[in-house]
Length: 171
Image (cartoon, rainbow, N blue to C red; front, side, top):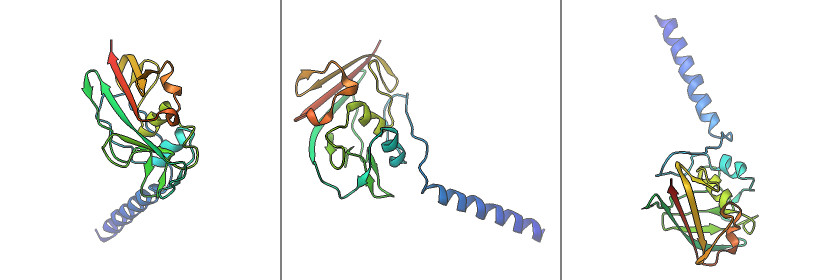
């Protein structure tokens, strides 16, 4: 009985140590094809890397600018969530990120002037292409400062002065 307890205790210690160690390793990026709500990914670094962007420290405010993003999916408003594009445990941020649920997207750090709307949704871990946003596939309409955007995926966010509106409607 006593030896069995030691084996179980040792197995639990190995499992717990393995889990603790894994939080420091980059994980697999997520790409949700579900409907909202979409929380911020737990492993922000994996998303930053999947987007092909360079992380910087959380306190890096170089190249700073911001704009408001409104998102509507199948007629319902979808709020932006805090910490999209951030990896708080590692104190890193992507060049596009959110601080809270106010709808403001921040562009800061290395590469902030090159981030596209497609990369922002990769940071969020949500499928975004010419026809789909998450589970909503059909029509994607994007307006930047009131003007229609013909190629939303490649829209450089630094070109948005004040407001970006994204609307997805299922067929």
